[in-house]
Image 1: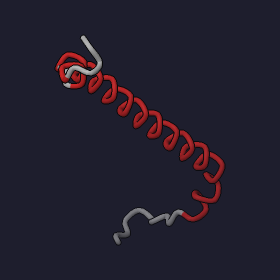
Image 2: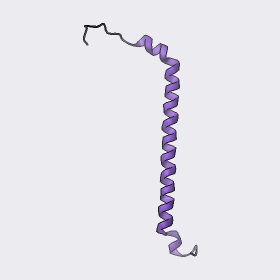
Image 3: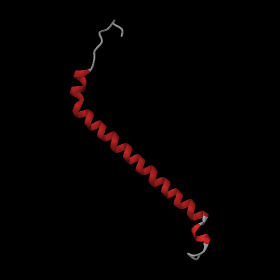
Length: 65
């Protein structure tokens, strides 16, 4: 296939393969970002757990909001 040929630019097999790779790369990146964010949140919560526990409002049994 000649690089100047229009089939080179619009080859359906190549377009499908490239699109699949782009999709997988994008989804992998998205999952990595979600995992990093979740990990950072868990680390932050683990350091702030005492402060969070002290700010919790404890409702005695038998009382309603």
